[in-house]
Amino acid sequence: MNQQSFIYNFLQAPGFRIWRHLLFLIAFIPLGLSMPFWSFGGYAEIPLSTIYGFGIGIIAAIMVFVCFNVSYLAPHYLPKGEYFTYIVVLLLLTAGFISLKHIAEDLILLNVGVKRAMNGVTVLEWLSNLMLYTITIASTSITALFKQWMTDNANIENLENKQLKNHLEEFKNRINPQFLYATLDYASEKAKSDPVQTSETLFNLSELLSYQLYDNGRESVLLESDIEFIRNYLTLEQQNSGHGLAFTIWATGRINIFIPPNLFMPLIEVTLKQQPDKLQIRFDVDDEWIRFECITPNTHLSSAGFKKTAQRFELLYGSKIILSKKDESIELHFRIC
Image 1 (cartoon, rainbow, N blue to C red):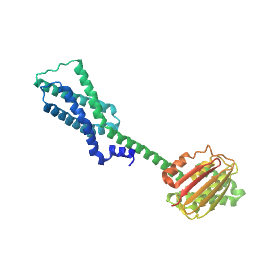
Image 2: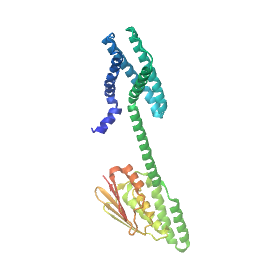
Image 3: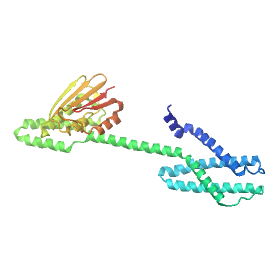
Image 4: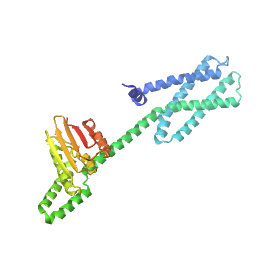
């Protein structure tokens, strides 16, 4: 167990509750015993049993105060962010405790014929005790604050992860309207002059939509089907683009394995936003890894926004994904097993 995990467990784990309370008790014993000796040590008439009894009473009162703070005050105010209200309530309760303590001290002194005068020193002592006890009691809220901080961090992380997952699911299930309109417009233009080309275009589009609507809802698809989807997509993109996109796809190894659907399209879409003239896509599959490489000759990918895509891959697939970018290519290594 490293030091960080030990501190974390000590501050919040239920198994360390007794040890936390014992630590607080040990810390409060010197404070509780020092106060009566400071107040009564100069009076020989006051027996040691009274001094120790008063000190034990102070320790017991502090422990009750601490338990009330930990079990009610801190959980009631701190998680809501009501820090000012918490401090005010704690100050008022501590002021009442200090006042009762001073009254008890005055009664003990009166029993030995000593009447303590009210002056500036007494007021300063009261204020110093107020600050000292308030800080001491408030310090016991560190576990509640730590738990709240951990909960907030976990909630933020869960929201970020959920957002990334939603973004990926949105990508998997969406059909780009601009791409769809461009394809249908191309097919309508070719309907009279080249009906064979129109038929091929509509067939490729139907295959594309079928994969997008049905296969994306599955946990895994054949790599061969995913490659065919990419081929259909790029064929239609080649027709729709005004700058004559050229592409080639190679696949070596076992392409009849199962992979998550649309694993590679996020990278291809980001690459296409750089408007390359040529794409060279290669799939190499062995017993453990799939290596995907997308090369864009004469087109630099330095400004391509692969960061969010990399975050989604890392979130969903963890160590199974290795993504690396070069000047004119992007590589993705996906562990099969």
